[in-house]
Length: 101
Image (tube, rainbow, N blue to C red; front, side, top):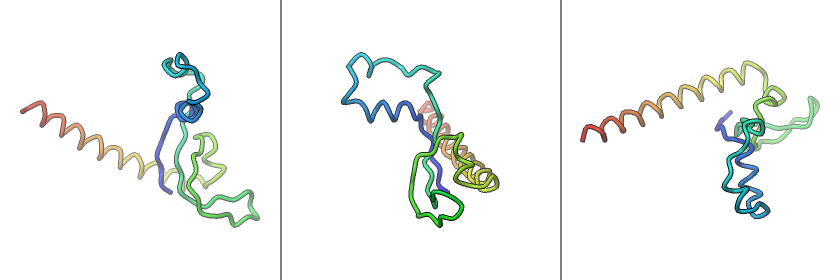
C-alpha cells in the first residue's frame, strides 16, 4: 500500500472551485467539515467474492479497514510515519543550515 494523506474537504472544494463564489473560495473550511483521507494504491473490489482490480483511490480514514486488514493498515501507517519522520528531519536540517548562513 502507498499512502498519502490529504484533507478531503479541501480537495472537494478545489474540485468544485468553478461552482464556488470568490468569497467561498477565500473562506477556510469549518473544522466540522474536515475529514482526513489517504491515497491508497492497492486492490479494490466490491465484496469478498470479488477479486477486484488494482487501482489508486482516495479512502477516508474511517473506511480504511473496509479495504485492508488491520495488520496491513498498521504496517502501512508505520511505514508512512517513518517516511514522514525522515522527510521532516531533512527539512528541519535544511532550515537550520539556511538559518546558519
